[in-house]
Length: 258
Image (cartoon, rainbow, N blue to C red; front, side):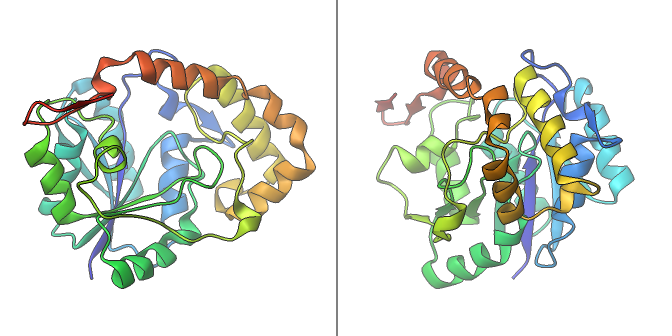
């Protein structure tokens, strides 16, 4: 089975401009995420999935420098972009995360593949981990179905088509209780997130990008004050999503799910 990791990446952020190009430990976050994914032996391809907008040219250059693929597709229709990338590289299964989650749990990739083979689920999620330590495993046919049923060209929130309808077989990846946390936010979206990540990488030491999730969580458990740096960002993110009209699930039959 040919498994690809598709990194959803853009440089359009206004909250923290060019956030993926910001550096920590001498490397930009986009590069560090790619290096982290290279630690997984189960991936046949790593693909940076960005838009055709010239502002995203630096992401294609990073992909080239790091020796991974780059697919450039629709700016707003993220699911279409991911699906077309999967088809271009003849992938049998896709695992996805956005590039603002540089410390994603790469060591769970083999478990997700095994669980997909066992369940055949349309979507496998693992959302019991800290914010930003997420993965989504997506069946190719399910990606195609989302494209067929949605009535809008905006699909940044494509995950909601799986989570807010009963049209898909959705499973949660079983994970150890010791990894389950909801009080840590390990994502790059606001300046406070950047300040937090700088301190986290510093605390994890040299080659922090290699740290497994249990080590990251253990470090934060022993340095819980760091979570105060960006704890308010979750509320800001929730409010932003709520106010974004494109976060609605709109089906071709006229159904609207907020």
